[in-house]
Each structure stands twice: as C-alpha cells, then as structure tokens.
Amino acid sequence: MAPRPKLFKKVLVANRGEIAIRVFRALSEMGIASVAVYSEADRLSSHLAYADEAHPIGPPPAAESYLDIDKIIAVARRTRCQAVHPGYGFLAESHEFAAACRDAGLVFIGPTAESIKAMGFKTRAKKIMADSGVPVIPGSDGAVKNAAAALKVAGDIGYPVMLKASAGGGGKGMRIIYEAAEIEQAFRTARSEAESYFGDPEIFIEKFIERPRHIEVQILADDYGNVIYLGERECSVQRRYQKLIEETPSPALDAATRKRICETAVKAAKAARYRNAGTVEFMLDRNGDFYFLEVNTRLQVEHPVTELVTGIDIVKNQIRIASGFELAYGQEDIAPEGSSIECRIYAEDPKNDFLPSLGRIRRVKNPEGPWVRVESYVYGGYDVPVYYDPLIAKVITWGEDRKAAIARMSRALGEYTIEGVETTIPFHMWVMRDRKFVSGDFDTSYIDRHYRGNATEAHHRVPPEIAVIAASISAVERSARAVRPAGAASRWRDTARREGAAR
Picture 1 (tube, one colour):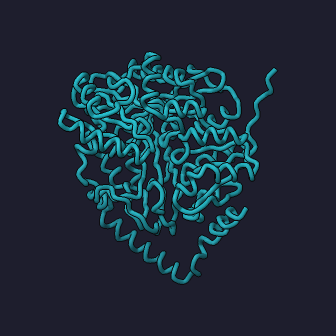
Picture 2 (spheres, one colour):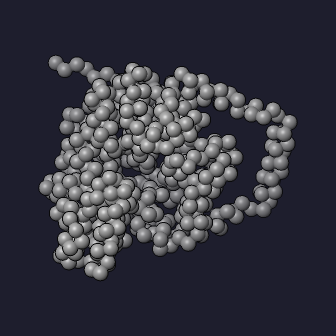
Picture 3 (tube, helix red, strand yellow):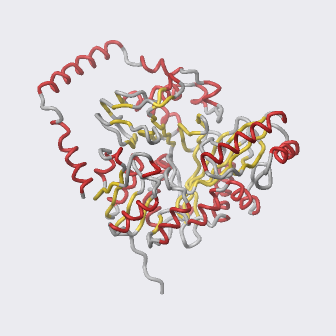
C-alpha cells in the first residue's frame, strides 16, 4: 500500500514581487514554512516580509541572482526545504531548473522537466498536438533550415505567414510576412533574434491568422491521470504580444465553442503527459475556428480571474498536487459564476509609447471595496528597479456579469493612486470606457488599431472641487510629516524587512 501523501513542511519561492507574495500567502494558510530569496536590488522588497526567512542570492542582474540555478538550489538545501515554487517568469519554464531540483532531492512545484522541455520548443509541441488530433495552425513540419525552405512553405500555405522562434516567446524572434520579397530579410532577422534571446536559432513558419482572439484554458492535472479544466480566459488586449488585460469568460465564445475548446485543452494536456497547473493557449479566428498555439508550463499572471469565478485556489492546488495528493475536484464540480477582469499595472508611460517609467514611488493608495483584489509589492518610498519586468501590480474585479465586472474595474482604477512614476492605470481606465471593449468587439490588434494615447483624458478625471479638497488634505499631511521624525511612520516595516532578511 502506497504511503499517504503529506504536505511539504518547507518551500522556497524562487521569485520576487507580487507573485512571490501570492505564493507565500498560500503557504502560510496551508501551515507550510516559507523561504524567500532576493537580489541586492530587492533587499528592501516587500516580498521578504511575507516569508518566514529570506536569503540573498547575488547582484541585481537576474542572470547573477534569480536565474542562477546553483545559487537557488544551494539556499533550498541549506534551509532544508523540500520543494521549490518557481512562480512565473525567471526559471518557471526552465526544464534545466526542474531537472536540477529533482537531482538535488527537491520537488519542483510544476510539471516534469520532460513536459517543460517538450512544450518549450514550439515545433516539438506542435507535432505532439497534431499527432493527438488537436487542431494546429497550418505551417512547416518542424523547423525551416533556410529562407528558400521558408519561401516554399509560404507558397504552399499562402500569405500572410509568420516566422517564429521555436524556443521563443514574448514576441521575440517573430516576423509577419505579406509577400515573397520579404522572406529572406525576415528570416535572417528572426533567426538572429532567436539566437540572441533564446540561445537557439531554430525557426519555423506558419499561416498568420489576421486579427484573431487569444483564448487560453486553465487546466489542473495530478499524478493519477486526472485532468480538469477551470474554464477559459480572454487575453486579446495585447501590445507587442504582451497581455495587458485578461478576463473570463470570453465574450467571443458561445457555450458550444467554449465546451469544445476546453475539452481540447484537456486532450492537449493528456498528450503532453502534463502534471500540475498549466495553460493551453489557442488562436480563435473570425470564423470561430480555433488552433493550438502553445502550452504555458507554469502558473499564469492572470490566474486570479479564474480563481474569482470558480472559487478554486490554483496555487494551493499546485502545492497539493506536487505533494502527491489527488485532485479534490472532478469536472462536474467546476461551475464558474459571474465574470472577472484583470488589469496589469506596469510602471510605463502610456502617453509615451509605453516606455518604462522608473524611479521612486512617493505614495500608493490601493482601491478597496467588495470583489476587488489587488496583488502588488510596491509601497511609498520604493524604488522601481531597472533590472526586472516593470509589472508592479494587478487589479482584479468580479461581477455577476461582464458589465458589472467592467463597472467595478472602472471604479477601482479611479481609486488607485500611485505617485512618483507613470503607470498604465490611465490606459486601463480608457479601455474600460471604450465602446469597442465594452461591447466585446476586439481582437489582438485592438490596441494598435484603436489606442492613440487617449489615456491623457483619464488624467483629468477628478472634478475641480474634489481636486481642491485633495490638495488641502495633501498640504495637511505634508505639514504633519514636517514635524514628525523622518521615517517614524514606517520604522516598524523597515525593521521587519531587516529582520526577515537576516534570518
């Protein structure tokens, strides 16, 4: 008889920022001790205060800290952790990291190294899906070796086409081609980017679906052959292939298509022999047909919207599955209710082509109220570092329907204050009021086609009389700070951080 599974006693979180805090909160509620790691740039990061202990792992550049596998594993072993949660980004989709954890006697809270590797190379993943009957975008059978081979495939499937890095993501190593004359230069550029960003020059080609919707399905899979879906997410509001707003359910799907795409995601997960939480991503064309895009072998940034409509804690399920427990739910138990939307808040200037806005944050006031969830790690006095992704927060709202979720998000964004750096809050406010978005009539070209820096109007959303009151309050606060010893209000927090870092 197999031993009864037990929850881990101690887990290291190999990440930073809001996702580290999200995982620490889940560990705390499950009674599991936690270990944080931090670079020199993050020695005052708020994620350290949420862990039971924190340990330095190197200089600010990610390659010398958060991406250094040996350093992270050394801390995990020294602190006698049983498992490592990678969060998302950094090493979350590194099959080398998953294998290194296994070799060190640590459980990687995620899929197996073999699944990560198979799904990490798009040509390999595409073949696995095609062989399993999952619809894939027409294109090359594997990598194309040169521009001539790409030219032939493009002629067979018809223009426009897209060149893509097999090991790529985030829009790097991708080129859209509308005619044969563009192939040679695009192939050289895409191949060079693939080598530079991913260390692998392999390129493949596929039909470019114009103005698609980006639909993804959240799945959970355990070690006992159980795979369920938690519904889909609409991720079409993107810029440079980076998602900015996500929601569930998708306004583009009817009930029949939703069932088909979710069941296809389960088929894809089984084909990949997938375990733990993951996301199967699809492109939906204007005819309502969908095609496999990729599998994200990790927790997604946008997982909270699924949690709000299902009531299921995805992070806790990740930990339970990795601990050896069977899924506590069958597909018949999943009954999403209402609608949820997430806005990613970046330290970027939407009035200036979304360029990063770095510096010191002077003041933060989070939105509050029923069914508003904020995941953030920044605070007044925090310096946004240049070394990492400028995502500084997420706002998630729930409503009984999409209209209510949008209205609640619009209200929450209006309450959100981050002073000292530019953020994408005004952009998100514009989107929540845009008739195209509100009607559900949008696709992945939405921002490029409709947004022209319109967020400037959101900067003037406060009525003049309210602004006068706010200015008076601000003056009183400044006066109070002038007579209070510097740092007095936050000394407890700074002390907590120093003690947490020292443990």
